[in-house]
Amino acid sequence: LQMPANESVSNREAEEKEIASRKEEAKFHYLNIVRANGLQSRNSLRIGFHAFALKEKSLWGLLGYRDEHETREAADVGESTWFATIRLAEKFRGVPEELFISMKLSNCKALSELPEPKRIDRDWLKFAADESMKDFAKRCDEEMNGKTRDSDTKEQSTTVKMIMPISR
Image 1 (cartoon, rainbow, N blue to C red):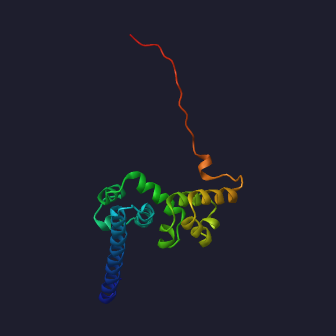
Image 2 (image 1 turned 90 degrees about the vertical axis):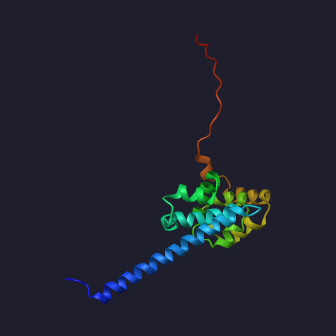
Image 3 (image 1 turned 60 degrees about the vertical axis):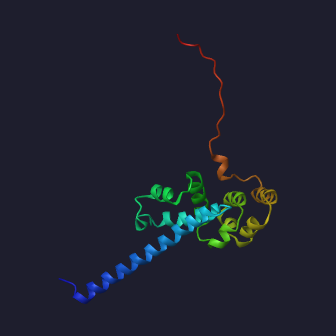
């Protein structure tokens, strides 16, 4: 059984529209990354927000790049900025861009340690945007009140000094 010609044309048109829409979305996110990277005061959270959107939907190819690495290099964003801010953006999935980027980076990191209901709460997002790092850190500490944070489980390293004989 074959589809009638008009159905296959409409399916093809729908696919082409979907591809064009995804390509426009990819361009939008990429251009926002490039613009944020070029600002006098770099807006790392904006980079993370849009890089996460590209990553989440695997839009690299629509921009003509093979992978995430090639996209990051083309946007001229350092690895640490790229990956750290993507991790933060992922923890704030669903938060509108303007709310997310309004936070101070250090406050965003502190807020990312809180449980999700607090993390995406508009009041907490506003606190992270408006309060000093010191005041916000205190607020987060009071909220956690001895609870385990994600960062508590990360490995910690120490320097070891050893005396060894010199080989001849």
